[in-house]
Length: 368
Image 1 (spheres, helix red, strand yellow):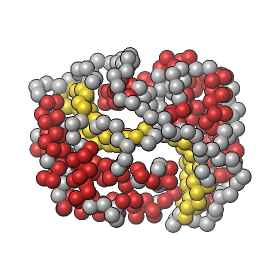
Image 2: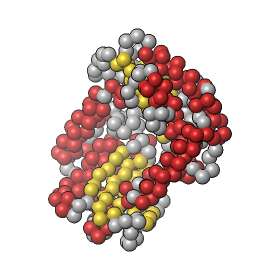
Image 3: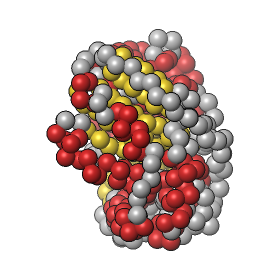
Image 4: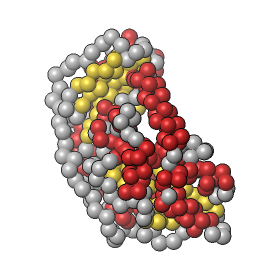
């Protein structure tokens, strides 16, 4: 891994510290520690919050299933004064036991908020039940039992050395003597029916959450992402047009490709009124659309989405300081890298290969 210096066409600067591995490094007993440690590492910036705001520098961080990222964004002239200090602060853990315990309470509140959302509750529980995956949010009993020593040990394992640093500036390259690491990301998940206790704190009346998931996928990720756009982007897309606009069966509809290291899973999601046969009708419509791909994936639709994504790529290049996902994720997941070569015929083949026989899960019945 390395330092990646990118040109910013504007005076806006972005600086990103990336730690790969994330929740893939967790195991039973410490599920959720990566996300908690993200919070704790951020506390190094607490004494400097007024200074950062005064310089107009935006600081934040996120934990995904595959990486943890800390970043600063702001004007070139202001951020350039802070980047070395930013690196030094984040790689030196000075959190006390009392601060750790207080932040753990905050993360537990975030945990409960996540499971209070009906759709998110369904998704998180399904990941546990079907794949033994606990996501960045973790497991409540593990969060409650984490010790200060657990956090110190995990900092040395995950946060002592980054995997890469991305520096996006108009004028200033970044160079610093840093030891980079590349954590093992070969862990594979297996589909099954795992004996987990579902986190079902609320009773949701009136609406049903519906998830329809593919089998685990090992390749063609960027192409699948493109086909997802064909099916879901805009109210005139096949899924939105038929399910929402013509039949009024749902408000929000989604289809997305989740990444688990070198594997993926494609999932259709929505919520609908529990009364009557709404859920069954949506399942039937989704299957009809996916099973007749050549009818719904037209040349006109293909051209619209490709042109949209090309325009989006240009806009992201202009605002490069805040758009660096393509330098964080593996190339095979980057839809922008295939825009000039993908064809409609390929999309239809991808749809026929990966968009059929999805497993249905609804939260008003058994999850699997």
